[in-house]
Image 1 (cartoon, rainbow, N blue to C red):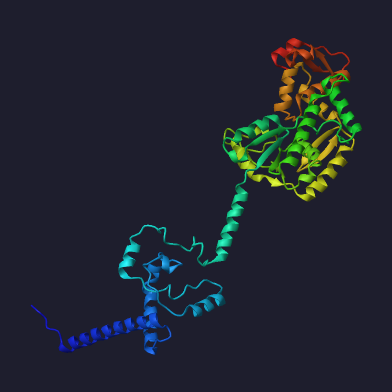
Image 2: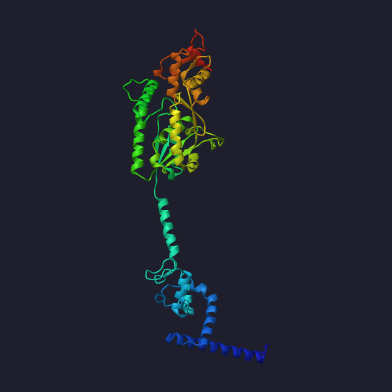
Length: 448
């Protein structure tokens, strides 16, 4: 069954088609006039052009964006039309942004548009806004400048930096070294400071008199002849000399000073920091003070020594590295100078970076408390002082203090220290004149 159309509707459709053909004829006439003489445009042509531009603004923006080139001659797929170039240039100068000529905003031929849409990427003849032709006008110089600055900043960050890790705990230094396998960005040489500046005289070490006083003390502790230079002092002097030389010659080298919550690490920091003022900005400190860590069993604890921390935990701890401030460079050496000249060769950590001075008998009392009244092997006593009393002082210093207690008759001994701790038996006199030392009692383990 067929449906006949209303004659009025047919007439109306025919009139619309005639109007459309007339519109196209006028458009063609407009473009021909523009091509010959742009100024010879009728008011009707201008109105038609504006109407078409409004129509193209909505329908052809998405097509023009990926294919528009800055040089229309390099791309034969673009048809040029639009207003005068001078009007467009004036508008671009007023706004400060690139306004492409309306000749560049012309319509794309339908067949050329289809060909461009089928292209997966720009060809060698096409130029995008991010990569303009050398002779073309730059669309946005400011964003390009920002990109250059951003690229430069990224290059500076990516420059390799040499890190030196300073520790006062040799076992802790080994743990830090193992953490480099988990975080290679933190890798660097480990600089171990052997001397323990929480013990012995430390005043005026940069002067000959102060240096000699500490040398004599070390000779007494280690039982060295007067003409023998303590190795611990000689070694540290050479390490610090090499450190200062490397910092002076290589500006890419930075120093990380690791500190646990103990007097040895803090005292070592105080001593070293006074020599590093000229390298401010490249000296970092990592003070693990009152910070929780996870042990091997998964429990949370607060370590005092770096050696108590697992390697994987140092990866997280490394994020705490911070630059030593100018105020710290000014105040910390002054604090250390006052402390080093105060009486008492023993320095204890009271909290934070606060150290206080004590006499040698501070550790003597702890040694006597652990020794008790029974006979005990020196090896067992050293173990108790480390594990139970948490005495964070070197073994050689403890032995030196035990020998001092023997000299003052507060402890009696049997055996030779040179043959090792297992060959020496000890017993506290506890103020008694006659005390018998029974080595067999120490063998049974009843010494506490």
